[in-house]
Structures are given as C-alpha cells and as structure tokens.
Image (cartoon, rainbow, N blue to C red):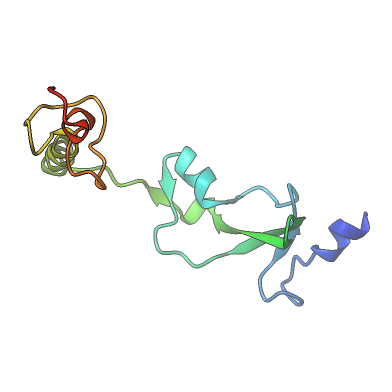
Length: 122
C-alpha cells in the first residue's frame, strides 16, 4: 500500500474519529451527498458514517460519506411551491422601469434592464 493511502487508511476510526478511507477506497454502501443526490436520495438526518481523505491543493481534503441503506428519497416540491418559484423567477426577469420581461435576469446592481440603464429605448 502506498504511503499516501496508508496515511488515510483508518477503517475503525481510531486515528480520525470516523472510519476513514483514501480516495476511491471506500467500500460499497457509502456515498457522498453529491452521489446520493445523483441517485435521487438524501441523507435524511442520519449522522456522518465515514469520510474519504486525500492530499489536495492547500492541504488534506475530506469528503463525508453517508450510508446508502439509511438514505431517504429526495423530497419534491409541491405544485404550489413550483408555482411560487416560477413567479419569483419571472419577477427577476421583469424590468421595473419598462415592465418588459427579458430573457436574462435583471442585474440587482442596476435595478432595471440593460436598455433602460443605458438610457435607450427598449
């Protein structure tokens, strides 16, 4: 086993407090938040089960792992929540000066669309 891998191999958690594995060395049944999300799952309130450590730019890096069998399905937004999100996104694209709906989000620093901010006609 390479020295780098051996430095992060602690499956019992004696050295780091959590079971620790090297990069791509975690056993099946564990996943990061990003991997859970890709599978349509979420941690669901479970504690961190293990961690993956590796040497990165600026020092040692860590990614926390959760047990896949304890993960819950991702929650989906209700129709009312989706409608509220759509309404809020529409408001971000509507100019407060000329009331035109733009294809881009209105910059908050300007408070109006780019045409109105330049002083031109929309």
